[in-house]
Length: 451
Image (cartoon, rainbow, N blue to C red; front, side):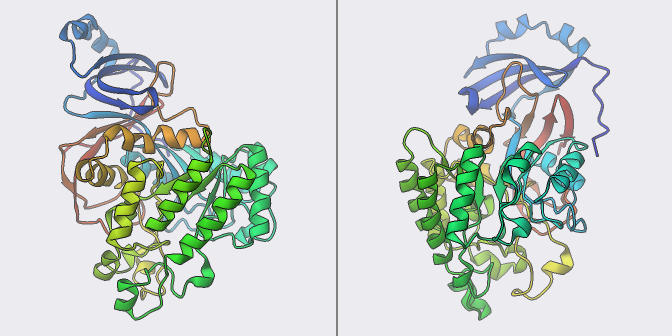
């Protein structure tokens, strides 16, 4: 449900003294912003050093009579983040999460837009189910988009009516969670998606090569005495599907990359795209932060599909992010109930929460530790996903949506709770670096936090 936080007594919001990182407009520097209604009314951009004379010209006292003042001194201002890979479990599994609680988790993480996956019950494979999701999403504080499934019932046998699903509001297609094993079927789906000019997102794990999903074949599987999931399961399907993508010209998103060899394959395929990039790839913060050691130490809360792999793979993913082979950071927010995660490791479901930790982990691991420019990281969380999906979001510009995230890079805190209905995260109890202190969507403050 929509937040009760009200700013209607004022004409809008005046944000001063923040450091704007706005890669979609190639801007990075000090700025003041004026928001009115749901739009950005004015951006005063100063660059690397704020000109006090220009600031004086803003007539701050007069503005503050009419606008709610937010002093963003010492903080970054980003466009509202966009997640292209979230599970809100609604309909059908609302004991794990629902669209309302998922939206609250998104807002707490700085996200103003999410693209939902369709492995719900019923599956989002008809206009009726899609309408349920979108109507409920419209009641939240954020922009809730949804994919349609590629196949009816996620069975990989019959295509959904992809044209009708686009007309009904689907922004893309995916059978996420289930790989599309039939090559001819996938090629047909890619051809249709290409004709509709919508992306198709692919979960890349050859189930025929996997003994136990969610656990890397190697040190982790040996620890548990099971067969596990080898990286070849991912590599083989990515190799096949990149070839199909290049043949069909489809816009393709390779989801949650976990192996360094996968990064190399994607890099070569992107080169073959030429000037118009249609092959995209996601990395999740969990895959560039953790290794298979986490599932040994923590257990099922670090069990993921595809699994956490080796340090070499983790570093390979970071290099893929550095050179823009991987152009999207996605959360794969996957809530599960505590009793489900408490089952034995081979029976517990795969997945972890992601929306509320993604920005802090990206800042820590990619900016502070790996030295990737902040603007490059923020692009993968904002304007890049907007470009893939054709959203008029992900950037700060006059006349554009007033969707913002204000982030304090110096505010460390211990992660003790979630806005999500679930708590399945290996980062619970961890000290996080940097904190989302405010999220604004459509000109309304929908989340705020201070130390």
